[in-house]
Image (cartoon, rainbow, N blue to C red; front, side):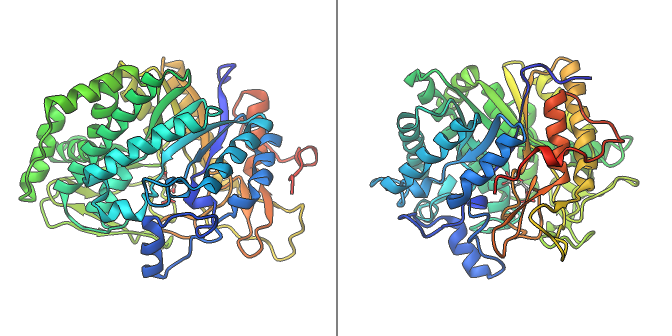
Length: 488
Ligand code: BGP
């Protein structure tokens, strides 16, 4: 089976995870700078030093046949204080970066917010404050005017990961726990500022496209025959996914989504948020004009009925089996027997990719185009002792993960879902927010000691798929490395 002719293949990155240079050229402080310094677990510098080495990585992307790459603009490089004075060196950097992409025949898909809120705006309440929402809209409008070379914009990356990790699981700064009310308010505010940005972009009539990227773990009942488990899965889905899908893709929250949320809040003795008719009008207008939705799919969840207290243990070290996820008023995560997980306890379940795509297709008919904007596997990988610049890292496990997921993408396309492209997470090894540097995702191996690049086997496999338009079969062997340079 072949991918459609104009299907776009590429890889994804995010500013804070790749750029490093967090104190260079007048960049302002973002929430992670302070949080990571306090935690003292790992430093965001130099990450993959993309701030200086972007031509190397983009050349590799080009050499391997990619035609699209996801990048994000660090808001604090442009507005160090979130609003007000513009830092021209930040603006100049992104002009250079986008030019390099286009010179390499790569279309940049540019995210405006990928987890790195300026600290000054978090101090004012982050997603919970009107000031942050207004500032975000202004930042977006500035970018639309300043960077006409960008055709594809993404408003927010994974708003769900932010809201829930900031206010419920406490794994993202400001690391509050169990505040479901705040999480819901942040979710609604993100939806609203996303919608205002989409509407502003369309009013500016710039001729490009705008979308949003959601993290969508497909949620299943642990035991589909047990009504309690079925309900727990519905609660988890409303909490993590549906509130966003309704808000951004339908333009209004369904009664069922709101009543599931009400149940979560009741169970936690917390109040419902207010949603005005005016808010809904803004959401609807944006959903009608949205060009695409990006799906970040890594794993699925299996939920069991649970009524105890909330208990979350995050596996941020790759210590398999160490994570716990029990949320009062929602459910308890419990892996179905026989399902493999990564070292970070993410359930490998390719069917979840298909089911998620079909659900968007079936339930959100306004959606025009879809992309897989992230999909990949974090692995513990190291450089062999006798490595030479030509060493290729054997990441067969990544290929074993990607192949069945891409098959599910093909199956969804065959069943009528308009998937236009696929971005593997990630282009190069980089800094992972809550896991540091040991969870590697890249096609390009980065030696974080000296920033040297090495290629991984999966990059050649991916290149084979781009060239043939087909997923290489199980017997695929690495034979092509001499034809592609590392561009180092
Ligand atoms: C998504 C984010 C990325 C990236 C990826 C892998 O949630 O958009 O920024 O980090 O997941 O997650 P992690 O780094 O936690 O393994």
